[in-house]
Length: 413
Image (tube, rainbow, N blue to C red; front, side, top):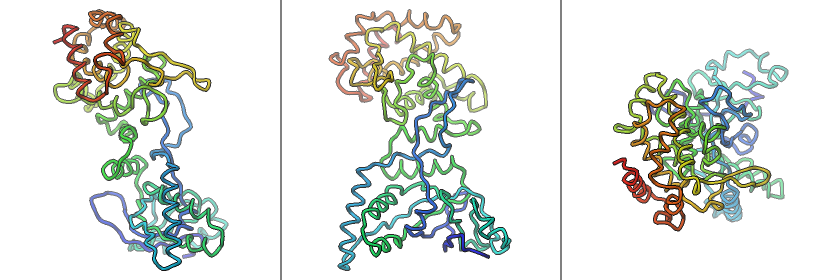
C-alpha cells in the first residue's frame, strides 16, 4: 500500500458500550495542524413550525462553544513557562488527557487491498477517506485539510498553536511540531452523535453553557423525538417567527442580545411535558408521532400576545444598536420578561391552557386577556418593577412566589 499521502497512526480499539468504532492513538502537533477542523455553534434562525423557514448558510456540524482568548492565553503562558523549564530538564509540560477527534468518513477495512493507482498523487487530490487495516491496529488518515473534527480539546490545541507561533527559532519550533497529543478517534459517528459526545463530555465533566447543551440535544432529527427537541423547537419558533411577541427576546445559546436565556425557556417548557403538566397528553401524542403538538406554538403566541396587551406598560421595547433593533436587560426597567416574571407567567400555563384549549385561535387572545385583566396595567407596572416586591433576584423560589401571587390574584387557584 502506498502511504505517502497518509499519516499512519498506530491505534488500539476501545470497547465500551458504543456502536461506532473508537480507537486510541496519538498525533503530532504538526500532523493535527494539517488535518484538523473545528466549529462554533451559531444562533439558529430557523423556525421549525413554519413552512417558510429562514435559510441560513451554517455548517450542519456546528456544535462547539467559542474559543475563549483568555483561556488560550493562559495555556500559552503555561507552555512558555514549561518550555523554559524543559530546557533545564525540569518541565512537567503535559496534556495527558485525550483530544477527541471525529473522522466522519466510512472506513475501508481492507487497506492492504487498495489499488496503488487509486492512491497515487494524481488520484489522491481531494481524497477524504480514512482507512483502517484488517486487525484495526493502524489508521491511515489522508493528509488533506479539515478531515479531522476536534470534538473536545480545541483550547489545548489552539493554545499550543498560539505558543508555537510565538517561537522565533526553527529549533524551538521543531520541538513543538513533534509535540504529541493522545487522541481518541471516533470513526463513523454521524454529526448528531458527535455533538452528543461533545455535550455529554463537557456538560457532565466540566462547566458548559446550559443553553448550548439544550441547543445540541434539541437539534436531534425529527425521527428521534424527545422533550428537549420539542421545547427547543418552541424556542426557535418564538424567537424567530414574525408573529411572535417575544421575537428576538431569547438569548439563543445563552449569549448575545435578549432578555432571558434559551436554557431558561426550555426548562420552563419541559415542566409542562411531565406527568401532571399542562401538556402531558400532547407530549405523549407527540412521542406517538401525532400532530397535537402543533397547537403549542399557536397557543404560546396568543398567550404571550395577551400578556403584552394586558400588561403593556412593563412589556419591553426594542432599542437600536448598531443599526439593529434589539432587546437588552440594561435598557429594561421591569422584570415581566426576565426570569422572575416569565418564570411565573410560564408556570401559569398549567392553569390557563385548560381554560382555552378548545377556544378558536382567533378568540383565544381575548379570552386570556379577560383572565389576566383582573390585574390592571397600572398594577402590573408596580408588580413587575425592578423596585417592586419581586424585583430582587431571579431564582426559582422568587419565581414560584410570584406565580402563587398571580394565581391567587387572578382567581386561578
